[in-house]
Length: 190
Image (cartoon, rainbow, N blue to C red; front, side, top):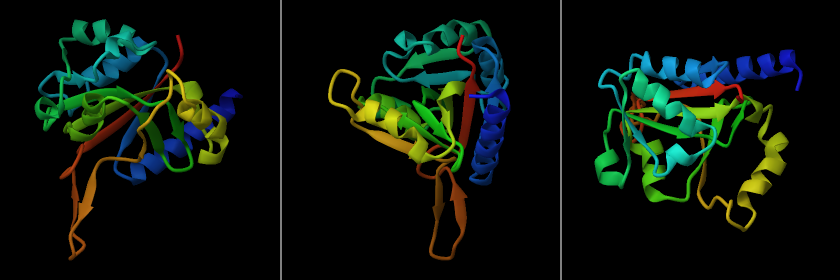
């Protein structure tokens, strides 16, 4: 993908996500991603919940020592109870869609899924090369993720922004049934 085309897609993604109440950042390296997360205003408690086995995920496991060096405490989630209302969670997305400002979160483990849904702030890492213009253009990648085998993802969710709920009087509330802060970090592959 051409650099200018990638920048255009990122700008479109950022606009769409911002319109939905989320935010995104572009990090040229894992070090920059660690800095953006550690300095984020939503991370006042300096505690992040991780999906089980996150340290073994490539390339994201290399980010964890960088966060710890910045004073962030990392805890691996065991189940939904200790995750509910945790100050922050960190997960990864398999792809992102510029047209809607959405990321595809796919987890087969309940504790991993809970990190994406029950923490107050949710930070999502996605490799910059996995940004697609439209959902249709990500068709082959979706087929790969859903093909039976060891890499098959059984639970895939497109997420666009923080949790939103409105009552019958159209009063919008953010974060009642999910994250109040939704931050996507695009990271250049190392």
